[in-house]
Image (cartoon, rainbow, N blue to C red; front, side):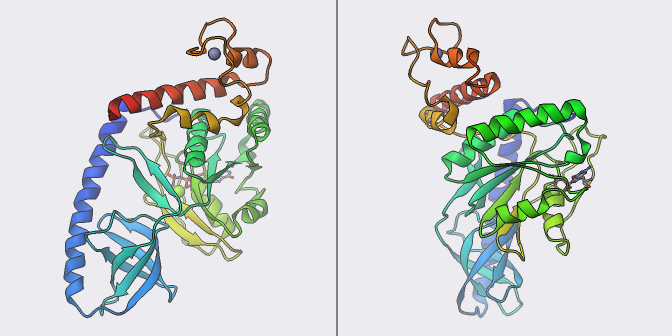
Length: 341
Ligand SMILES: Nc1nc2c(ncn2[C@@H]2O[C@H](COP(=O)(O)OP(=O)(O)OP(=O)(O)O)[C@@H](O)[C@H]2O)c(=O)[nH]1
Ligand SMILES: [Mg+2]
Ligand SMILES: [Zn+2]
């Protein structure tokens, strides 16, 4: 695939820079909030954060209109999907004064702590495509992350119009694997308008977020569902090799057919921040019959005799790549736990 993988250290550094920026932004937003507070503010009213722009958030009020709001200093950094209480200022802007506890939270790790990306999400729609080439590990990390956070997850293969014969069988196997594990999978093409109505059904009555690599067509899918929405769609850039990120901040859209759908910026990597390795196993349902069944209690599932997991792979009951994914995530969690001490 085109995108270059960042080393863990590079990734951490990038995340930390973003955290610092966001901390500064939160601070200046808070100051602006105090300013706004001095004015005559309207009564408290409920609202939804539909987007965040550094210092400010866009809150949709009961009037259905978007208001540029600052947040009170005592609140945590607000994210798209947050339910809030806010007050209108005379100039049409507003101040968020309270945050309703989040039902669910999609987070990404930073060195200090996981940071929320979006909130109150029911399901993760993991989008991938023949172009840019998928990273199955990314899919697995999203699945584990969703499962631990109490969200459903579904797999969406977009751009199926681009599949050639060899790719078709590779992707068929991939979808068959995940369907076998119990995940809903959908094959789509925005270009040929395949699967769009099924996706609409999937979104009804749910708050969903589309996630995945840059350029797989997350925004295009939202546009296909709601052609009248001003969703930015881009082309993949070969210049940087990183792909161009067209969507820069998560934004929540209402679907006329019911349900809310959050567009999110593409990722190169999706790190997990799990400090309890025991949380990983239950997120690999196909491993359940074999976990804890190895001859040695401390089996590394490498080359020990009578390893139940390796036997399951030999028998074709477990996909070898999924086992690798599992082992990698457990190792990462053990490392995170050691670092957290
Ligand atoms: N051939 C084909 N191209 C598609 C399809 N869906 C989207 N595209 C194209 O893929 C490119 C990227 O689409 P976007 O919707 O911007 O992708 P994205 O996932 O939102 O990307 P980021 O916002 O950067 O994360 C655009 O040029 C789209 O026209 C499809 O079904 N088939
Ligand atoms: Mg996009
Ligand atoms: Zn073993």
